[in-house]
Image (cartoon, rainbow, N blue to C red; front, side, top):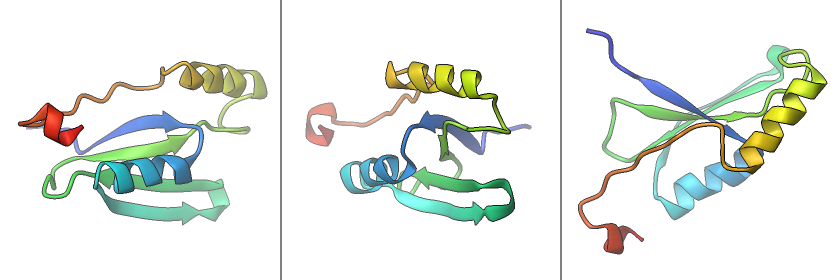
Length: 97
């Protein structure tokens, strides 16, 4: 059986996204690793108690991962709400809100 362990979500600002998921939603940090040689921060959050999946908060990549124009286009799409879909489930939507 193959299972999903992590899903990736494009973000403009990892610190801002981290604050939202941890402070607003109450999620926990599962990984926060900086890979300096790649200029990449691997940041994974997940709901407390849901140990089988994590959400990677991935910044829109600059060069050399993407050329400048592709990076700009992706950033524009993320600003419009594209870049991933996250479906959350709760027993009481009003209480969670």
